[in-house]
Length: 329
Image (cartoon, rainbow, N blue to C red):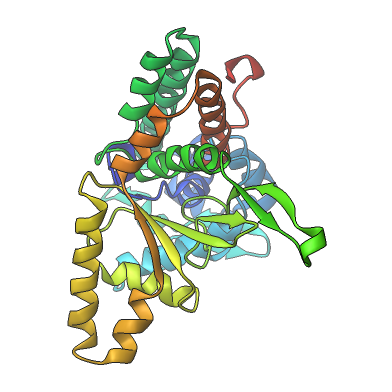
């Protein structure tokens, strides 16, 4: 549950937590402090649990993997010496093993529910803070004030999801100002704006590509890590196709590039083919400095468009479709 206060790409694990919480809630109502009665229980129907946790905050797009396998798999990864699975699955019904509901003679299920409910409450507040900031920004009439508020969202301590979404909105608007000329022949060459597309959620399995540009076919990867092996891994994922890295740092892009090249030389240990492969695959480095500079060059209309995009993509990222329409920007 580091996602509440962490500034990294800490996963919220809502699917796993909500799967457990759904069973706990029904258990507390039916079997709290009744171990003998619970031991005879057949469990709860899948559709009942699924409907419950999909109705929770941020749960509208959750799938059934948590109930069916993921919770037990991750539970065993963290506690490899346990004998029993956390969730017992039996012919479409689910229940928690009694071993994990009692500490000695004390039923801890109600306390567990309160912990999860507090976690949900903190997540809701955290999500609301950004949405309120966006709403407040939209109400400003001074363009420079809007730009300063937007720049404040770009910081080395900004949560990774927020940084990725904000940087995408800025890059999308920045590149839309540029035009290129494409055609299959001299007579068919036409003018096109550069368009940037986000590939999915920040924790999606996207093959090392966060944004894709058309029609020129550029790949962008957002990162905050200083472990440069992660950069090379991202390059490997796309078969050494050139990648532009958007880095959550105030360091100069030239310094970041020097650090990466130093790491590549160390990894290559004199092997020219390895050194050439990775160096040629780094198309550009973009840092907070460039993003903030590009904000300064935008118009009031541009800034309003960026704020709207951040609002849309943040709601999508966090599964916030349950917010009322009037809360949207």
